[in-house]
Length: 209
Ligand code: AR6
Image (tube, rainbow, N blue to C red):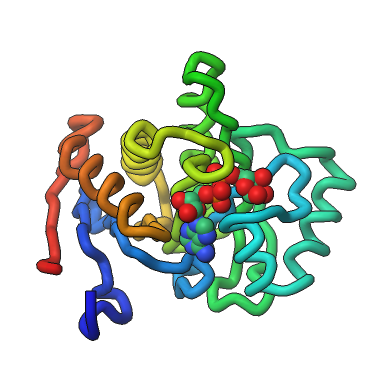
């Protein structure tokens, strides 16, 4: 945790998949500091900003992001849960922000799992359509939207592994977890999952902490 965790080697756990694709788990960390081609925002349907990671991204990236969000909403209306759109990264190091809307957790029997998986699939597809190579996700829906973190982690990881298998340009995905407990939950889920779709190789590396 101290000193050594800089640059691209700052992961706590990394999964190596087929085709030199990697999944990294990083934290506790602030996604607005990421150097990947895009960071993913856990937005709400209005796309007009909010608290949590959404507020942090708009504050750090500046007004250019909100201006593009407004244009998108004026064209397509509110963004439904499970969908994703892309804007500039404004002042962020990441050139783009992919805004996706996670499901609000209402007990787990209202299509929440499918919507959360869709957030990851569609964000990766959008990054791919823009020829991006790397992107960073926060723990979508696990804050204000109340999704139990262990369930969200398993879904986020398995849907990301699946989406990476058919991605053309995206080859590096990072989960940037804000607090130690979420970081532990996601790394445990990664270790438990092992080979989720049985077509990818799934090799886990851990850095000593
Ligand atoms: N970097 C990385 N992760 C963060 C950061 C950050 N700077 N700040 C918070 N998190 P939430 P949701 C973590 O509530 O549950 C907003 O108001 C946080 O600790 O941001 O999808 C939107 O406008 C948690 O682990 O997103 C929506 O209305 C995770 O990000 C609503 O909240 C997600 O927490 C979306 O709720």
